[in-house]
Length: 156
Image (cartoon, rainbow, N blue to C red; front, side, top):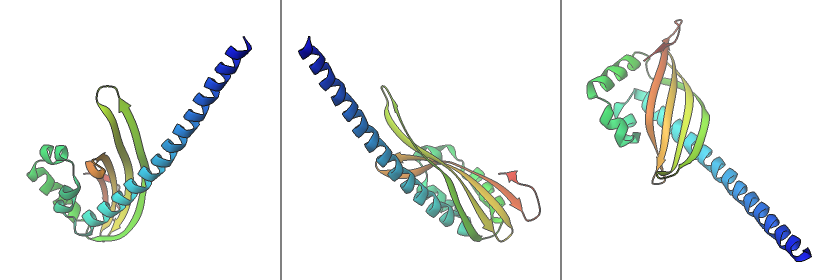
């Protein structure tokens, strides 16, 4: 009986140590994903909003986003956004990355950020959805709320 209790104690301790190590790795990896995704968003928003460039968005977009976005819709969006003028000051992004695992389809790493920028003629608030594929962040959703100076925000 004493031997059985000893074996169960060792097994329990092994499971606890393995779980602690797993959580430590998960937290470390999560922090690295947050830092990488935030740096990606900061660079992407600055590149896109500096001259309101469709090409900068498409260079960073997932194939799915490129396929579902019609060129005329994208052109109209960027024509409307260009009325805000060039980027004057990027005020940063808030958000973070998420890791998930689905049986049968594997793991997914995504991130969601809200970023704010001041432009020559108003303010833009970006809502950006990212996914990580093959070690690379890509934009899978891009929405902008904008407001010309002195007017309330409007969704574009």
